[in-house]
Image 1 (tube, rainbow, N blue to C red):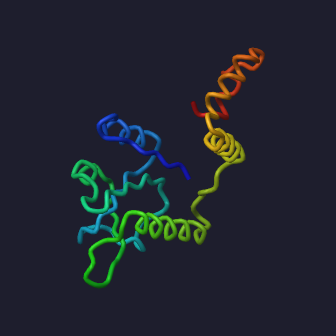
Image 2 (tube, rainbow, N blue to C red):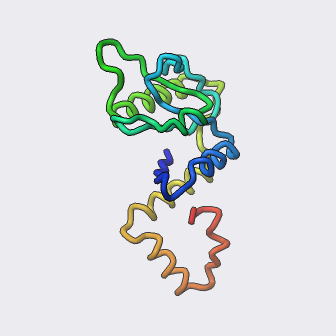
Length: 154
């Protein structure tokens, strides 16, 4: 799973929403609004970028207005929403279970994608991993950066 955290002040929301759409993702806003799609009715046959809001404020109106789908977790009782970590866990569990149960949706990563994710995970797991890699490449000019770009996200 890729997790990207954007600060609205640093990045224009429309920029990364457009980037996600250009990569084939539908924009999914989680919200307890009554008119939202129930989690168990959500169509998992399309790639989805799922946005979660802050616990008190929820998602900004910008994300709600630009969402392709609004998604809610059915809740019974007096509370209107879960905290963000619980909501994310429920949504991710539900959607991955639905994916595993459907044989008509190709959700698996290719071997190349698995390898790339593993390399990126290694780089993030090692303190200063990217800096160490850059130093290594500087000391080993025979390894052209362009030869590694297909496996490493810079």
